[in-house]
Amino acid sequence: MRIGVLTAGGDCPGLNAVIRSVVHRAVDNYGDEVIGFEDGYAGLLEGRYRGLDLNGVSGILARGGTILGSSRLERDRLREACENAADIARDFGIDALIPIGGEGTLTAARMLSDAGLPVVGVPKTIDNDISSTDRTFGFDTAVGVATEAMDRLKTTAESHQRVMVVEVMGRHAGWIALESGMAAGAHGICLPERPFDPGDLVKMVEERFARGKKFAVVCVAEGAHPVEGTMDYGKGEIDLYGHERFQGIGTALAHELERRLGKEAKPVILGHVQRGGTPTAYDRVLATRFGWHAVEAAHRGEFGRMTALRGTDVVMVPLAEAVTELKTVPKYRMDEAESVF
Image (cartoon, rainbow, N blue to C red; front, side, top):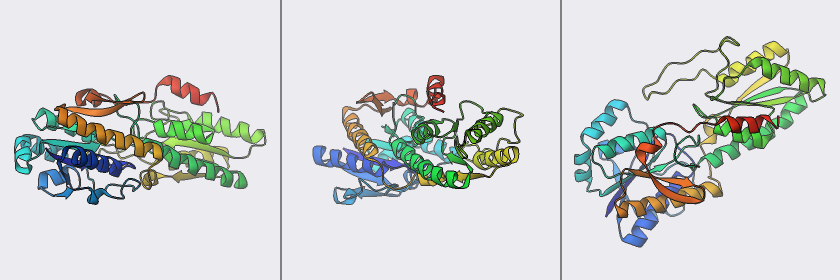
């Protein structure tokens, strides 16, 4: 069997672990040939790929990013790929394609599968917002990075009697903000799933200062929005890939709190630091298991499906099921977090 593998969308700790696992399982156990398409679906369309053998993936388990490179694909080019799915499989001689990516990548994988390309998907996203899987690799690493950042910011906030507003990733799902905020003991958490009232945060800070706790840390997801009319903050434009360009809620909220409180409030935007660096042990193991099961599924002919974690088991689920809707933070998880504020 000749297997193609690619990484698309935003980079994520653990991508290289999946690539390594795919190569080891395919080459060692089945004698397969594995090729890696460069820069995601763009490499698939443009015929840019290279062979992947055991030497080629040696030493990449703990390496962040992706050795294959990544990119996002405009919708017009995705349609072009679907129209030429049969030609792609024939031209490259691939018997299976394993795309590794988030919601956009898996949506494209489903479209290619529907067009006749033999596809087995592997979900990845630091946002942990893919339906049908309990966890995605990269999320644990991102939560750890954000938690450590807030642990460090608490000490400087306390030293200078400041409010620190820490913006983490999470466009439509606030899992990183929820879990890192809880782990770091943030004094407020703002999620995309529930509009927040800055007045509540002002009250919280004032009550803390009145008790002698003259600092506060607020964790806010990049996609969080205030309740309409409570502060000046608008929606951004939509980019070429269908994503909203956010206006910077961390900075806007810090300025609003400083204006209302008359106290210094500083925004800290963690941004892409959450995506980079060494994956945690948990993410390396999950990514390795996903790669192993993707190869097994390809050899069983289970195309149009993706790997998913259910409890402690890795199972195969239909791509159509995985991309129907995003997995957002449910109310009961928000209630749990609020109980420890």
